[in-house]
Image (cartoon, rainbow, N blue to C red; front, side, top):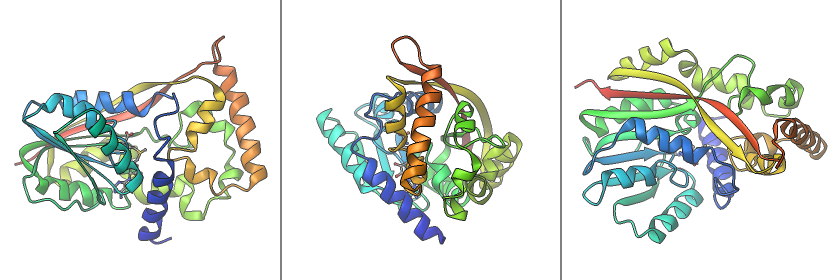
Length: 286
Ligand SMILES: C[S@@+](CC[C@H](N)C(=O)[O-])C[C@H]1O[C@@H](n2cnc3c(N)ncnc32)[C@H](O)[C@@H]1O
């Protein structure tokens, strides 16, 4: 699959899920975005670019920090995400948020436009994330900062899921995915530089950053029920797996996941999972 086809499929999947993305009662992206912004520390008056902004998990906490003199620009390749985020910005009456449909691989802004670039669970979708990181240095002011999250890739685990779920998704099921979409292939093709902290530091330094800090933390994911978790999984990266599964295989996966998740649930049916997340911060070396 060509990178352009891959990107189009990613854009279509997130466009289709935008209306329910992060709005099904499953807390994960919002707390992760808040934590990332906390680590990025945008100050009053600063200009922030959030790449792959989705419905604004980073945009809104960043807008609160930069205040009325600052500006947060959110870009996303999925028009539906931008429409939803823009509707929320309007509803909140925010004048310091600007949202645009744009490819995060080569954002078109004049040099030095931003003090901070953030990206939560979005760089992992870029076929040329390393090239993008290099291009972001030009968009940043001298000493500007970058902060992003990714899954903690661990051998044998499904990249977009906490490790507890790995045994519920047998490898043969992943055989329904086109070869280039197999998780191991995706990690190898796009994300191998994120796998080991040393590689990540070297890559970022090679792109023109300094003071790289890699922090592995857990983000507490909560879902009101196992069935809601499965519904939610159709609205994030895993949607790409669901849409390639034949009906019978999808039904089997659904019941296995629900059964497995119910074992983790408390008396009220609520599922709580501490998902390992990698937080990375750095500053431009100039
Ligand atoms: C898992 S979501 C994360 C969204 C948001 N940052 C959050 O934390 O909720 C990944 C987002 O990246 C966007 N994305 C994927 N590839 C992109 C690209 N090439 N350019 C811009 N956005 C992209 C998707 O459309 C989606 O909204």
